[in-house]
Amino acid sequence: AETERGLSRKHIIEGLRDSLSRLQLEYVDIVFANRTDINSPMEEVVRAMTFVINHGMAMYWGTSRWSAMEIMEAYSVARQFNLIPPVCEQAEYHYYHRDKVEVQLPELYHKIGVGVMTWSPLAGGLISGKYNDGIPEDSRAAMKGYVWMKDRIFSEEGQKQLAKIKELHPLADRMNCTLAQLAI
Image 1: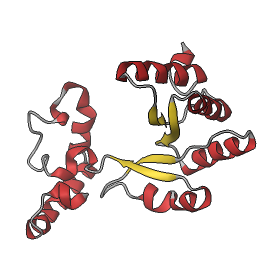
Image 2: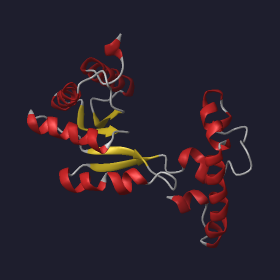
Image 3: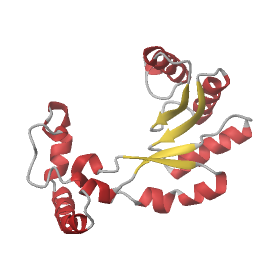
Image 4: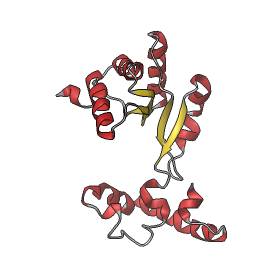
């Protein structure tokens, strides 16, 4: 059913209840709304997140993979209806994906106080150097459901990124650290 996925009120509340049960927790510190949902009005999402906070299921809520405009809309809806706004955006951030965190979101940090949490600091392992000489058998990119990752690595852009990583190896060696440590 349409309400069993995405960001419908039903799915947010029931999904979080089920997660708390599986985790054997009474609440989580923060619950994220991953990607916006064209089938759920923003007011419904913000009201559902306010509900789970007011009912002690979460302390805060945040967004993940939302645009600055979508975050601002959630904030505006929260202010308009006296609801709880998101406190942070969870954004991809690494050598090859810096624009959102460094250019698009800073204005929101200052205007409405929304923070940022980042994910994929090693670009799915690309920055670790493990794919420099191909796809290791025991890597995620070699797994059945990760053909998209293998395709990304072998794409023209992926090969350019790998070439840049190889150039960083001497710097990591000079600093006596791994590529992953250098990246983070």
